[in-house]
Length: 215
Length: 179
Image 1: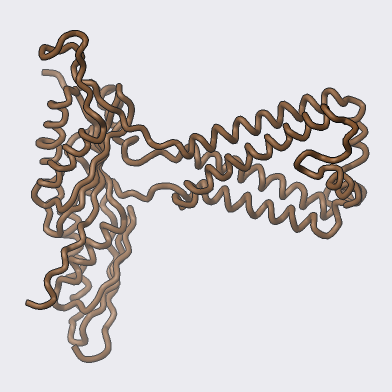
Image 2: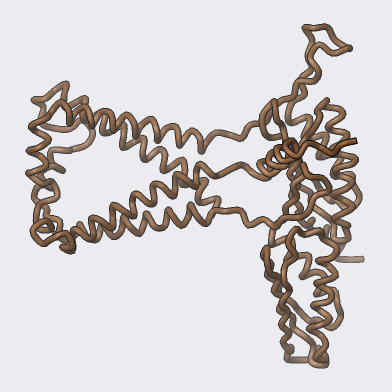
């Protein structure tokens, strides 16, 4: 018997790592790019103000008549450039805002369309919430786990499970993880008809329930 | 930081879009009604006159430039620092990624350290690379307490399959006052 294909393993590992949390790469890039632009612009203007590029340049007005005259000789080009620039800013800004506000995908799973139980027109759809709830309920029943929450993330073609486990004080972490894989996730894979279901598990510590103050 | 980024990102996008829409509106309005001197939304003729009067050296300009640069620096810092500070735990299979938070590790270590009789109080800070334990000992505690606390923490770290084992630093202080 040969081992698993290393490329498949790498892809699964990547899907599991991507399921840890919603990616903020886009937002971070946007913040860094806008920040760098503001930083560069601010620094250049400050240097200009303090006469680094020459005192003659610094004492000219902000709206330099030279530049205004240059724009006036080409009114059509200036107007076209302004329209294109405005359009670009509006579209980019809206796309960024929509991207940042869009809720995370929760893929519903289609089980075995046209399987033995149904005709070719039948397909069974398991909603993301139902699949996640089943996994969470099973995970919460594991010994050492106080509470559990699960969420199905990714795409329909490549779903992944995000599981948060709140462990009890005396939990054996290795045992909990092994049982989560062997019992909970294996059951989920089998019942959802998936060859593989990468998972990102988050471990937290459960708050102990306060006992009665009067015995 | 991540929460700040989550709030800032859509606001930044909307601000950029708003600037674009205003530019479009004003340019189109100015080309449709070239004789109307006033702007549609933005009073740009007044701005135009003010900008033509103000020189680069005049009072508010350097201040605004420095303020803009500082704002840019803050944005860059938010973008760079909004990383996740997860601690990786070895999973039972390659397709299972397990993480935990530094806070969870610190709480686990703290509970284990405080459970001992010879420790009066303890504060714990944990990160991916290091666990700091500052324990307060009762007056009658011997010098071997630090080693005892360290051994307890190392035992705990043996039980959790952390991907990188953090280094443990223990400091012990005497607690003043009766037990």
